[in-house]
Length: 89
Image 1 (cartoon, helix red, strand yellow):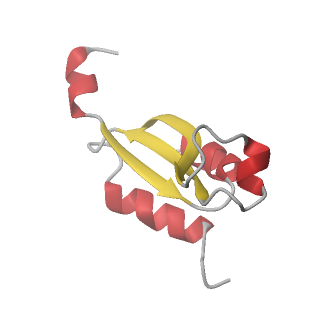
Image 2 (spheres, rainbow, N blue to C red):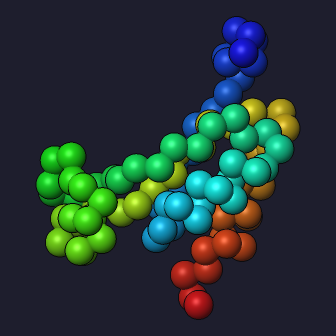
Image 3 (tube, rainbow, N blue to C red):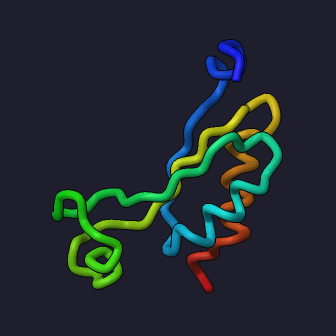
């Protein structure tokens, strides 16, 4: 990746329940360069997947999305996210 492209990249971190589903969906979008799954918040340092799934660590499953804002906007990412993850359903 050339330096100009690297310099214009932005990062968004979104939590939405299961990061496996979010990771695959965001990775397919034009303008998304990288999607990384992980955990945010919580009280347990370096929790395992099993610990987080138990609901006892306080962590949320999140995806960190690196994207090119000239190809996809942050707003577009949010609209896509809320189409996938409707908290009212």
